[in-house]
Length: 571
Image (cartoon, rainbow, N blue to C red):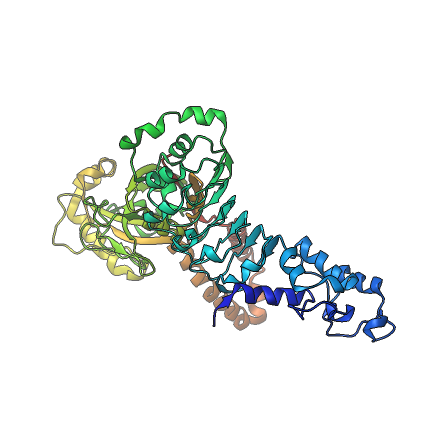
């Protein structure tokens, strides 16, 4: 798509106001052309423009649902000039248009160039060019009368052209949501270029050098309002205090008023620049996990013998960004996952490379805790990050959180090391039971007499490598930390887990129902008479109670597995 100049976009907007002959000569307007009608007016008795009623035309400008109703985004100036086009069309001249407007809004018009056509608006005080495709703005094409210049949501990465011949009386400069990153750009934000600047919006760029930027902004003696939120430099612990103490006359920082108490609190911080860090420190806190089905119920149904003793531990894993050149590595990962989404190495941790960005992440884990209704980890870990730009990308992408189950089989230390480990799966049938009986008999009375003691002292047993299973994985949003929040709390929902027993019951229920139905059809009247005997009635009653208990269990809604996680900045 070809680029658009500001003058071209303004011409289209003026035509939408009914000024389709712009630029025009005096006397070339009539009331009908001023409205730029494309459909006949039902309220007018004649189609002759000279006979149209002025009041009817004005009503069409203000009537809700009218084809000529002004867009709600139009300014009061646009409304007034359209009424003038109806009531006093002879006034609408080229000179009048250029001198009339004090404010111009060209928003989301795919403008790529600010041309010298704007210089004709010699009374222009406010220019809003938001949500366009500007990569640079040459200030020599801006009217020198400007007081407000809004350039947010463009693609501006350099401020050099903007400082060629800037408006000397500019009071507000809006550069939010652009691509300003290089610290050298801060040299264009001094009183040499903007002596009258009162408000500066640099939010949601990629500025990282806090100390250099603030040293430049200190020269703006009239600066009272500053917005820097969304920049990586705001991740630095002393960001707010250092900024407030350095720019003494600042009244509002990141939309938060600066009170006298806050100024007193940070008094003298700007003199400690040498001792201040340029790194970000974050804390990840894992709280309570609940909703995990009790695995001991399944274990008791599968394991009627003394050994192996089966225990379950649960861990929370999360991926967090690391500096690529960092020497430290996170804690060891498990050797493998089943049905996992994360990539794990055989030993230790290597830095994972995200396919959608350039930041690297390492896998961190909580302690493994046994099952309970509510598992309270109380886990906290500090992360120090140097590359603030990549940290911003990581926070916007979110943090992957995974819940892991570790199933551990424990055996007596004197058990035969070469013997095959019996499988606890129900599908194994009688062979596993026979093997277990042989193993139990070989241990003799010694194992039987000390079974309770051995179960209590698990550390004395021999443990198989844990069987690891991924119970769920979610992405925790962290975007609020970029927007200025100091911490974010999230309850990660892993969904509802179905145990092996529940799955077996669900698979068996349809088959049992079909079998029962076939038996009932085959039995016929004889089966009906048989059910009338006392013995059959007792079975029927027992069956009814079993069905009722099953229905009561189904009525109790399962609880989803959740984990409470907080990520916070050190400020």
